[in-house]
Image 1: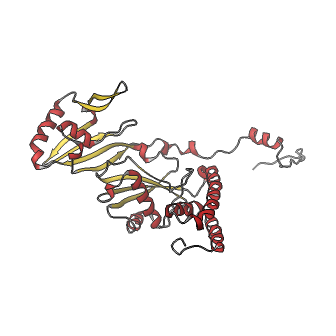
Image 2: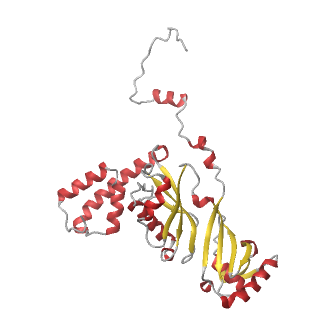
Image 3: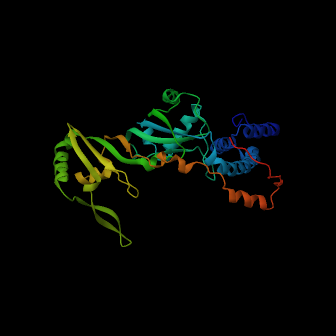
Length: 329
């Protein structure tokens, strides 16, 4: 409709009614904002749609936790070039568009400006390939395609460099996958010209109890450098020919960049570290997934129901004769 030129007023009324009937107000609002149509023709409709979206968002916030149809889809995927050259927010948008193009009923989030409820696991550094990445998408209902067939269906619509490997449905109360990521497994293909130097430096690093380098930053509020011990940040070093395999931990408050770690050990610049690949991201056990009874919707207790009946509600209390015997069983 946007590409066809100025719309007819009657067509916009029919469009608004159709979006509301299909529960696609948020989807339509998102697409319309991304298209940035002519305000002279679409401005009034956009404002009406914005108001309808605000009401729908409030309604969804009340029903979100108790919606029996909602599903959380956990994805394992690989990202290579050129998709790995996109920053994490861009990768979320790529993945969301791919899932929606594949026909999955992706739910809209609860943000003030709703967008598809898709989130990544632990993000990759820019231009670094990942062979076992994690993401999650909230679906309005269970997918129509069996889970074992879903990756093939999604990959038909995926951009170059993005490929889904596995899909699973997890409990809605499970911890976000980003909180479960605990360890990254890396492989670095060392250039032949640097191999001897890299082996020597890595041997020194592995043998040292502490390996401190200067890290640019602020010291007492002023620009400067402080000494940082890299030894506990990089673990399980092993050479396989020209390839260095190692692991880094993922912990709250830590933003370990493997390119900067290797550059600090080798004495170079992070931008010179090429050929780095994240093979997989390990997940820790999810305690919340095993405690489903704690997250089930609870009914009001008898006292709360009694207070509701005695308040000024429109519920009519009927007195009945309780003298007759009640037979159980």
